[in-house]
Structures are given as structure tokens and as C-alpha cells.
Length: 362
Image (cartoon, rainbow, N blue to C red; front, top):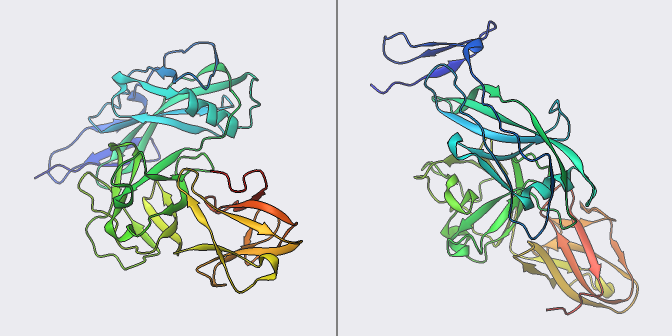
């Protein structure tokens, strides 16, 4: 019979491991664990948009004293106590270390609101986790020593951690696949708007990187209702394609811890309504797959108002000033020619822009 281990904490710091056999398995004693040792990196770095890798973090293997599956995560923080931190990368093979790109490190520092061209101290540690094989939950964590480096970021557009939505719509290629983004930077909660064209029902999956080895999230084979509001996925090479959706655009949220995929919105077109006093006919917006935002070129003959709405209906509409809200007030706009953008990827910060310089741009 296959042995299934279950790791359980006790108030005295013991982790008992049991199996379906009658044998007595080793008892985990917290004080016997040997944490990873993280090797120091350079004392200072100046990041550059033209460089690729920032640094490779090397560390020894954690020994829990018992034979368990382990994962390692590199964490970074602006404070030595790691009161708030971000996960930069993971591995199951500590001998290879964890390599972090300059782009990833730079985007984290900008998210921490470090001024470009200004040095700031960043602290790093490795978290080793033993997994409960029966529930796939983290049952034990051990932290390495903490190291630090003075790092100078460069100016540039903020890059958020992301996961890929790959499917028939992208010909199962990552180069044309759209993404869900972790706007909080926690690398747990991701969201975004995806344009599937007419291929949503043909199936898609979610991956952590541009391969099938770092998160392969799909269905477990159970029946799923059409247009399901949420699905619990599995991370498995044999997982099935997600094929219960049939509209063109979807705003999804994905929790990388619970593996729950939530469908917030599903619609077939986004439009602008109300310009030049016309509240009957929508200007249908295009979608830029590279930036994952809607846009339309408009000619505004006089000072007027408008709103955004989906599927030429008021069930789902946006208005307001600055950050938009569902059902918000009309948006004022002055006479002129504009390219109007609508960015719905971040549900907590839906924004628009009326850009005269971009009008009829390629």
C-alpha cells in the first residue's frame, strides 16, 4: 500500500508522521532541523534595463530530519524583520540556486516606491517548506539566514508578477498568450482581462511561466457548469483544459494558493456611449492584446459626457472621475479628437485615458 504521510504540528513543536501501514515512522523534532544557509551576494548593485540577470542566490539544502518533499522560495523585504515581503522565485532543487532577473528585481523596487537611481537596502532569505502529501498544504517552514544588498533601480514601466493564460486562442503559444497580473505583488492573487476571440470554448490553461514545469493549472476532470463563476483547478501535467466559457472577453481572478479561478465578468464587446449626445449607439472599442486594454479613436464635436458599457447594455457599465466604478457618474470630456483607453485589468483600480496625441496612431 502506498505510504501517505501527514504532517501535523503540536504545541510542543513535534510533527508526527503517520502512514496507512502499522509501522512507526520517524517523529519530527523542530530543534533537529538544519536550516538552509544563504550565500552572500554583492554588497551593492546598480540595475540596468539592458542587463538580463540580477543575481543567482545560492544556498544549502534544508534538513528536516525526516524524508519529506521540500520547496524553496526566495523572499525579499525592505525591512530586516520581513514584516512585509515579496517572493521572487522558487525551486525544488537547491543545488541550482535561484536566479533573479534585473527586470524582476527592478519591478519589485518600483512597487516598493523606491525612487529610480536611488540606492536602497534590500534583505533576502530562503523559506524552506515541507509539504503535507495528503492535503498538499504547507505543514512546516524553516527560514535561512538573512543577507542584504544595496540596490539601485532604474526608471521604467512597472512590471507586475504574472501568470500566463495559454490556450487555443493563442495557438497554445506563450508568445501570444495574455496574462493575469499580481497587482499587489503578493504573487498569490492575479487578475486581468483576456480576449479569447471566438476560441474560449476551445480550451485554455494557466501556467506560472513560459513552460509546463512551473505551474500547469487545469481542470480535474469533474463536470463544470457553463460560464461557471468559479472553478478549483489542479496543478498537474495531466490536468484538463478549461472549456466552460464561450464569450469573447473575460476578467478572471486566480488565487495561486487555493487554485480557485474566479470569473468576474464575461462579455462580447466593450463600448463608449454618450459622446456628442448620442446615448443610443455604442462606439465599439478595440482590444490591444499587448497591453490588455481597450481603446477607440473618437471625434468629440463639443464638450460632452460619456460612459463605458458592455454588450450595448446598462447591466455592466463604468463611470466616475479618475478611478472608475461600476454604475458611476458620467465622464466629462472636452471637444477634440482622442484615443480613449480603458484598462480593466485591476479590479481595484479601473482607469481610463483620453489621449489626443495617440489619436489615429498605428
